[in-house]
Image (cartoon, rainbow over all chains, first blue to last red; front, side):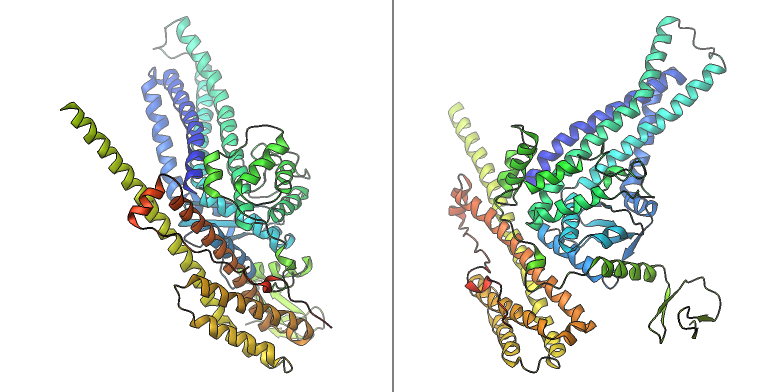
Length: 403
Length: 186
């Protein structure tokens, strides 16, 4: 795996350096316009970036999980999900079991976070748990785990921070430029035309920088998605699982409430799209879903990286693949397997209704609802802020004591 | 003087390459050991689950003495195989897997048992343990493949031969015909 991570890293490092240069240039122009010294601007940009990086490195995952209102679950809350994650942890050879979080949202999405493989988390929405069967869930989890395994998570977090610094600097820079020009030129600036040109170029640059930065950010993210799909097929040996999961994800129209522009590339599909629009239509941060599905479905005869690369070339009709030759050789051959659900030792797949009930029960438990089973068979879910001592069953009228 | 320095330089470079390859081989071998330990954990977990399963199933399946006995027997046999013998271990574990799958197929005839919450939870655990065994086996075999490739390919094969590395054994569960899904007749 190391070979692949390395070749992947080189491409990403080039893009990250590009973003760093953008940040420094923005800082330089801001310094030039306000302090008549580019160096001061550089220092400001670097300090801002360093501070944000420190926060991101040590607190990034918990900030992201808090922002998306994810709740940590234990094995007893949802044994099946826990087992699926553990299976993929084993298949990928990850050393430590990642923490599992649930986002209470009917939209279908998932993301992974954590600064290194030994301190990682996987978050999935409750909608995903309702809609996907075991094989599909396995494909999605394998995709997320491979983000952890390939160290995409840290890279994405750090580039998100770089993007954040550029956006912040540019935002304040344009506001300050705007107000200072209304208040009249400062006394020190009598430099004539040359200075005005620098100011204009700087202003244009400061306005354009966040857009450039975003393009780079999305380019990094797209590459990572393909590799994570390929790894998912390799770990599960069953590309159809992820393919049919992505299809379901693409057909869903729900919008994730807690996602925002900066966190969008962290999810398995782009959560940031217009209400009612299918996920497959708009995907700047991610490759088009239809294409991802088609590649996975054209993997014939094996689940290795070389088969994924062949399928990729076939779908794109190009000679250049997306995985480097050394990576393909390092991983080696891998055969496909059939759907798990058809094997005799497997548990019967719960239906959509059963899965929904299971997820709902888990969410009630996580939100500290009390469950009272009435003699008539009705299950009463009592919210934690319920103050009365007794509650009447709405079905048969029996009165129950709370507590 | 100069030729001597050149020769010394070449030797030094070769020594460094040798050390690098050797360390790579050691790392691979440790990965194989670690991957094997992962399989072991899952196999032990399966041994632990079986008595619970038997306890739950016994009350319902009064006519399946033979199937139940074969599972218990296969488990005890598998447990006795010494840990290092990959070949014998895979054979015994295959036996246990097929005995278990026969049992789980028979379960279909007992609707009461299938409604038992305790059994359902156990069945999920067992099915997932089967998956974990197959995934850890998959990871182990991938790791062994990479070690073996390195041992057989030039130039690392030279280092491997000098330092006495031996190729790893694959852990196969497909060896016997019992891999086929058992048929149920009504």
